[in-house]
Amino acid sequence: MNIISIQNNIGLPKYKQIILSIEKAIEEEKLVKGDRLPSVNKVCLAFSLSRDTVLLGYDELKKRGIIYAIPGKGYYVKSVETTIKQKIFLLFDELNIFKEDIYNSFLKNIGKNVQVDIFFHHFNVQVFRKLINDSNGNYTKYIIMPTNLAGVADILKTLPVNEVIILDQTNPDLKLYPAIYQNHQKDIFEGLFKGKVKLNKYEKLILIFPGFREPLGMKMGFEHFCNENNFEYEIITEFTDREITLGDLYIIPNDRDLVRVIESARDQHLKLGVDFGIISYNETPLKKIVANGITTISTHFETMGKILAEMVLKGNKDQIENKSSLIIRNSL
Image (cartoon, rainbow, N blue to C red; front, side, top):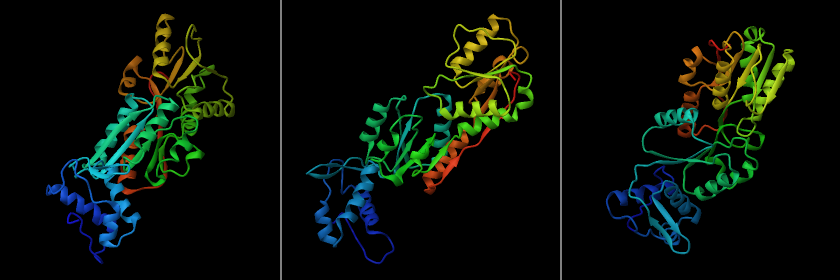
């Protein structure tokens, strides 16, 4: 029991004294990888502590990956790397350039002594559930990108509510959790409204909305804008075997569809920004130069990553709506 030291009236919670004692024992090589820790009952008896206090200390070390538990046998040293103070589970839907911007900004701002493990559910609820279940209890924070998967709220109930942060999309079922998110319904409405003067020259607004990965709020905001401002509009699920009509304006969330529309316009010898228009969703460096510039409605992904890091470091419990902008270029 000489590896654990508990003192009264020093202003430091006793569960934290347990953590610091074990960290010090590892740093001094009194404990090495694979060593068994004193049992919960022994620590309780030695220092007149409650089981909850001891378990709180051990669980914190477990979440940081320093120790692990074998049911019925006890706790053992898993890693001698004690400098890791936060171990973060980061669950994205898929990897693309926008998620890379969020991820890189998050890593840049989260600071040192933090381990970030990234996973992807690829819009598959079974994969989502398995990743959550397998990670439960092994991390200090769980950052979750739920997208539009059904039943997410029930799956997340298995995680400690104070350790979950929602990223990118949220909904009323997830109101218990802090979040940094996009308001897609508001963003597309306000983006189109800001460009309304330029939109007036077009005959029809066409949203390409496959509906599998895309947030439903995007479609709702588009319909709201068109109805409120008396624009003729159409919503299609894909751009295939279709000719562009003079006066069409395409709103395109998916970059694959953006390429198809530009290729079709080239084949039809149509001039972008004159014969037809494009507004793409999500800003990338390429959209500054493709076809002499593609107009975008986009949130600020680097800002999202920075705010996310601040939420982790400061324990912010707010739901924060990330800002969005309309960036007007040649395609409008």
